[in-house]
Length: 359
Image 1 (cartoon, rainbow, N blue to C red):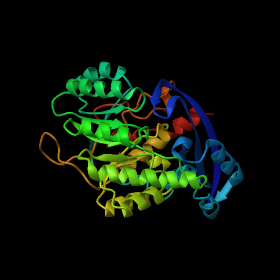
Image 2 (cartoon, one colour; image 1 turned 180 degrees about the vertical axis):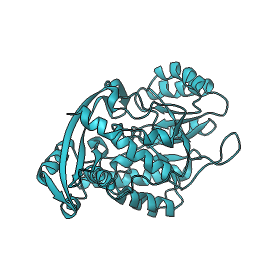
Image 3 (cartoon, helix red, strand yellow; image 1 turned 60 degrees about the vertical axis):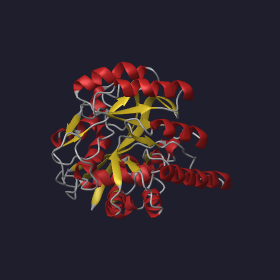
Image 4 (cartoon, rainbow, N blue to C red; image 1 turned 135 degrees about the vertical axis):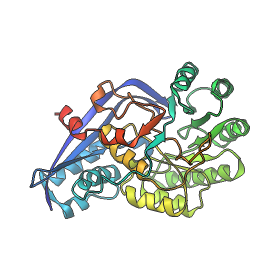
């Protein structure tokens, strides 16, 4: 099949800057790709790399898009190098519109959503309002300020949580062993669902970088096996090869999956399903184009579930998609953040509207 291939690069200011251990994000950069067949049917996908995690850069994605040219067939599209995982994911998402794989039936009618709390003391002011809105899972960015101050705030946050609520801590790889153990000791008797990516090393590069990554991976496995609070991998899962490696290593914790950063989403999820892995689907702060594809994967995921806290039928783990409204221009947002996201909300996302907004 032959397609007309187009792409548009975006640089979108965020409505409110996001502070993490990686620094302050005030804008998001990426590309939307569009495939149109000779019958005029079109599909869109998104390449939203995060170089700090170890993905390709936006410049590399744009260069590869220019190399593809205005017209490309299946073989040409498949020739995009594996190292450009975000672009391969975007192309696969757009290509799926012609294979009827984007309309896979949802395994769930709705899934809970974790409320995203800002770093530092500002989190305390939001717990109450979000709890009143119905949120019962909260995600707090840590590893940003002084350790002693954040540990003190942890107790305040736990005290402010509604009955039965849980807290996810996301360190974005900010800690060494000593700091990670200090946190895990504190979390042991508190309502902490998991600690996300306590340690992280740069990917690839010279031998020293590779050796450091190996040491950090050994450290993560050691922490996961030594402490009762579960640990989740995030930055450590960028490509399907990472998931295969961690599954092979017998990772006992949680896999935080950002579909937008995986080159082969279906293959990665098949490995996780086979391993009966604990999975949380999470946003990569992408636009509505990438969000729809990621959320469709989340709603179709038939894997591990946890019992509902209030009884009744089991429910999947809460989504890490409580990020919207994210962009200063709301046309690029996914569904508004709410305690639960419905499958029908995902299907209402209009990806062509995002494409048009970039014209």
